Length: 204
Image (cartoon, rainbow, N blue to C red; front, side, top):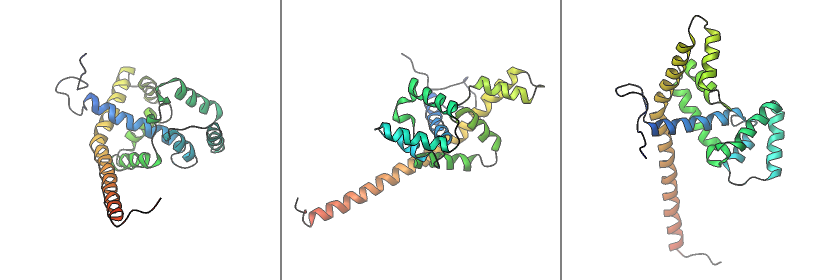
C-alpha cells in the first residue's frame, strides 16, 4: 500500500505533509474536546477521567453531575458522549490532560493573537463534536449570501489550512520542550536516586 506524504497539489504553499496534518489536527481535536467539557475549570474532573486509563461508574456519574451543574444541556451532553462511545474517540489517547490542553491553548493564543477570526474557525471545526466543513460553509454562506456556496467552502478550507500550518511548528516545538523538560527532570531524579542508593539502600 502506498501512503501519501503530502496533501494538496504539487507546488502549493502553506501545505503540511499528511503526517503533519494528522498530528496537528489530533492536537486540535483534543483541545476542542477539552474546551467543550470545561476548559480545565468545571469540567476538570471529566478531563482527568478521560485522560486516565481506568473508568469507574462512580467517577463517571460524579463528572456528569458537575458538567450538568456547569450548564451543559443534557441532549448536548448525551450526543457528545454517544459519539465518544460509538466512534474512535473511545480510546483514552483521544483525550489530553489539563497540562497538555493548556499547552495547546497557549500556543493557539500566542500564534493567532492577531487573527481572532482564525481562532473562531478552529473552535467551530474542533470544539466539542466539531462542525463539518460543509456546515461551516453553510453558516458562512448565510452570513454572506453575496458569496456562492463554492466560494464559502474554499474559504473555510483555506482558513483552516492556514491556521493549522501556522500552528504546526510552534506546537511541535512546545511539545518537544515539554518532553525535554520531562526527560531532564527524570535524569536528575535518577541521578539523585543513584547517589542516594550508593550511600546505602534502606532496609525493606
